[in-house]
Length: 432
Image (spheres, rainbow, N blue to C red):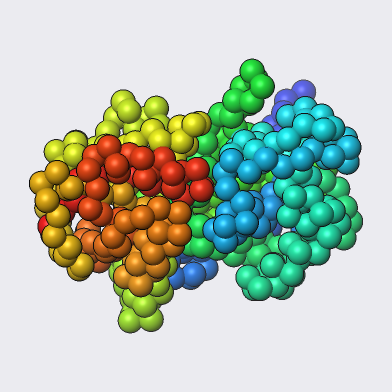
């Protein structure tokens, strides 16, 4: 009918305009309808699905695969099998990995400290192979280990064959499984989540900027990972927080990085608006889920902590300690600071003298026992008295894991030693 109305030389142009207008009124899922597209958005605390489209359809993960490689690496750090300073050998296989890479050569070694940002920022395939061989002897075996871990995490539709996400027809996943992996990365390893917001990575005199432009361009986004191979299209897994609510979202199959990011931003806006229209705690079940989850905080780079510290933290003397050789450990985290209006109660009050009034804070958790266990774990490497400080922030109770009873210089030394073991920490004035 429209074709009958349109006449003359402008007919083709008018048809194009008309098509664009029609598309603008279609739902995003129809605009994005293509064989590779899938998406999901879920509430990070309750697990409630706020949006999904082909979320259980089989897709190629591409470099989202590296999130599982990082999960395995973080687990090795947590279990004491590695530290951030552990150096991993580079094999001929690893050195042969195609772009993107960081130009590793056979016979070199790569530290865990450098491997993490290499995987996140550069999405380096050679670094992924190095980690795979360090943890699984061969990349093929590591792929089997990754698949087994996926099953343990409830990722029933995911199979891994390599550590990088390079093309392999047997390497498949779903948007739902990638969202589940993103959630577990944040909840199981909150002390490492800050790496996913790293803007740039420096290695061997080169600077690699992050592929994840959403972190700097989209409100509230503070991680996680992008990915692309021809078979998958442009993928991204994202976490964002606005108004004390956090969502996890995955988009797969974008036709371009820009289109993918724009679509993700639209999904986030819609999902946050949807979440804000509902009460925060709809029932006791949701409250229990929130209470069990450790806080997934995003830690700013050390340079940011130097230049824009929290004013309330300055008043309390809680300033970051640049304790590790690379300046990674000892970041200031949002969960490390208590607003002036919050109440603080010390659950384990151990007297200390005026000179022994410094503590090493290791993390903040929703569960008291998790905080105590984390502080106790630190005593494997350093001597100190375990303390758990209970605080209330925005009507939520949290527990801070600390080692106490130090003089200021001693606390700095203890934090440095913990950093060498891969444990982030912060030197603060003891309370109580």
